Length: 433
Image (cartoon, rainbow, N blue to C red; front, side, top):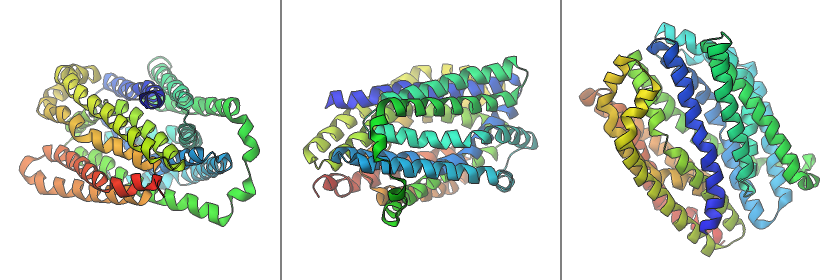
């Protein structure tokens, strides 16, 4: 079982390691092009795309769980049906995003409280990166399909390509091609289309023999569309809840000024560094839980969950130790702005407790997705959103900006408790029925 888990987890971890590095490079480029408002511009612009794309992450999570269960049943006809429905949905949503792009950004800034300079920079970034929408959304479906088929190497190759091209192209366009801040967005566009091309090539190489199972007419029959969208509707609500928390975090941070917005943005990047290691095992949990539930193998399911949790809790403990010694140096790598660095010290303790509080929630996420326990995932996230905002508004009069971090940790605790309490019925029972 360790071999099965590591075969899926390690390629995902190798790919995930480059994700925070790219985000850090974007922030580092912005941090060295000028003052704190440039970092704020990246933060708010990223939030705008979170508003769009996080809501669409069901294209990956829903595809992965359903394909994994089809793989466990050895039902490749169903696996290709899910893939076809996912790709069709991705391109239709991308066209809609293009159609409403101006309305969207105007509506967003009715609620986002940012300085005029930060808002101008965020708009500049948004209207360039938006043209990568078809590639970005299709990559969600490709990744879900590959993981569901127990193939972690192909999404690793795609992610590495996207992230390395993003890094290189952003540096080139921003620093050497004279585009400045806009070059960061252009680098992302080039990278996303590079990834889509590679994913298409890998699909042909590894799964050409499954193309015979593609049946467009069957895919659009009501009973199959209903099944696809019922699960994904719950996961869409889950994504909206994530959006409320992370976008709310950034928006509330902006109320405390550009310097504290920059501090909060960098802190969040550092906090999530370790989660890219956890995510590798969460993806393994998604693939294996779906596979063993599809195969009706409860013994292997329990064994897989035990092994995955052992790895994830070990990573959480090691990550806390790393943050003790490397937290401040990592922060200084992100910016050389003296005011931002000086303001960061009082937030560092949150960095140390993040892995301990969140590792169980992140791990359950993957396992529940593999089980396609979509209603439970949805309900847990709804309670987490309520907990986040309740904790913030209750504590902000007493601890000011620290209330943001109190709220964030509260939502993680709620997710951990809720999923742990419902796992027996919503995960393990599905492998027996």
